[in-house]
Image (cartoon, rainbow, N blue to C red; front, side, top):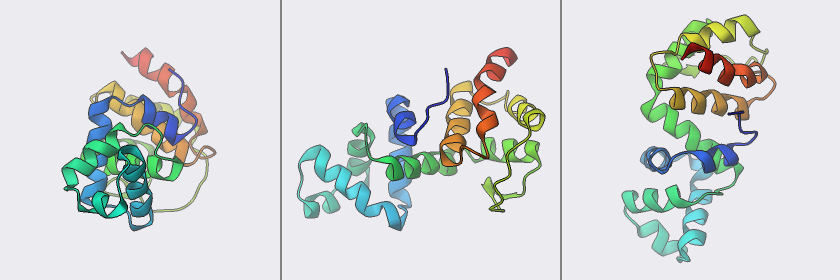
Length: 165
């Protein structure tokens, strides 16, 4: 499996339960800059008036948003980030620790965008062997779609994961 080139394509290929987990995490702490895009996706998906979409309980909004296969690139990125920050911080911490990158509970501290060296990346991916391979692939693909230059080396990660299995 090659990495998906966009967050929207990655979102489309997530299993429904992962999309629901991401949407639930997103609505638990919606990013202000993406809240209107999420509302727009709900309105479009269910042909609702904006007021009706706003009045829906959070679980209903999450269930609806999880069915939207093309939420737009910015919202898809936000949903993927929400998924990882809500449920997969141990994976994030393990990967960033193995790379030796400064982070705060799985969130990179620096904005430096230097490409990750091949051998360091391979070792960091190997350090994730205890985590489910699908979750690892989704995380690595999320990093890749956020910054293709810095994480270009991750395009080989699927082969590394198969070799580790």
